Image 1 (spheres, rainbow, N blue to C red):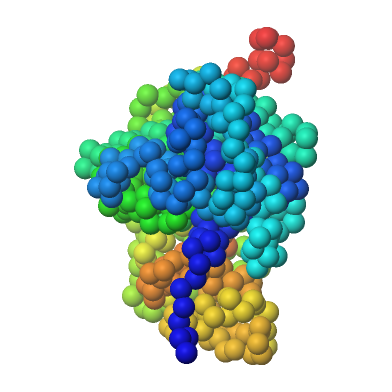
Image 2: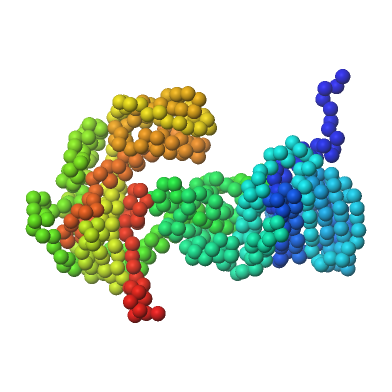
Length: 606
């Protein structure tokens, strides 16, 4: 008796269809790509019950003849390529010849189409990959495909479909991507007989953003571009301004040679460009279009063609990160120095009102790099903690920083005037274009944070008096168990405690006042994201947390009264920082108000 048997072709096709058609959104994607490849300029999408009951795509593309219509539903039939070698020069979406045949094997399909060379159109009624009925019909040039009752003949797959709302959201993601990519095509989207989106053709992706999302997002997008001859790549698009952030990555889109792709590394490169600008847990919006030699990519690594492989992936990642950093630097620079054409900051002193003798009695002028003179009362043992936490070489480096930066005040000219201090928190500067407000605490944090960079080793480990029990998911527990030595080597001792709990027994001394749960969960998240995460990466993250905490504790606070010399030195030191636009926690160090805005408020300008 034979145990191994060959499945009938129609059953094998149903199983294989699952690689291409997993849910209604996959069908919408394949059909929209076919419409675009057919040259359509007007496309309408209709769905019912989140696409589970009905999906219909109507386009005005080139259409098909009767013979081509019959061929299109067969397995591995395509007009895009003749051999695998054609993939190196491919510039269309479809090419595998699997989409329509897979769709027809798991649903009921009505295909209506008419080519320009024919006066009549063709209608095919298909079920289980078989043509049940064929007829001639009156039809405009183009194609109309109607899919009903997806997976009715494959109950094992149908039961995994989500709710109407979830499936519709997945379809909308496809609709957004295709509409953004082809903003010169008119799109309409209907759900349960109601129109949700009507997007006429426009001449820029920013106008399409306004159509799909809102004007607020469109107005907060910064144009950017970069080019690299070695990678034969050009990147253009838009990224959101720092103040316009989100709690998720759902508005980060990448398009490679007009194909929407999902690539985690590209997203990470973009987010790295926002390092020290966006707070932790916040994400930008971005719409990035990559044009690259087709020979330098592989679009055939996934049946649904939504992933892509680069020949030089690191080069592309670096280009995206560099482009993002440069564009944000230009934007933030314009906020501080909107009319400046020089690379150096020039300031001058406009005599502010001086602190009263009573206010400054008993303390010398503040030197912003002399940490030992800047400890708040609740942190009087800070210097002692430093000595205990770091080795003698580190303490020596710490003292050197203080000595090297004392009495460093830049002689300046007439571009800026320091007017004084607002609410003992903000330093006010004036230039010809308007007014700049500097947050004295955030600015001083940034100065100290960069001075401490790569100066200290990790602190000693402290055993917790009361070990911390933390509840985590099973997935996180698996990640943690695989990398437990990284935590231990960096002063965090963890043991499993139950099926979904861990107990933290010790942490580095400098982190003892921070949330243990937050530290551990953030490191697990990073471990999950980084396939090549190692001990050095963990060490770097912990050192950065240490530097941020030290800078925060040692910096001047909101409510500290500053003299004119102290304000001048702080602004001068801030301008020398590489990332002077935000504090280590992502808050802005300064903000500007243009004179034009003030004049509008006082009705001096319309």
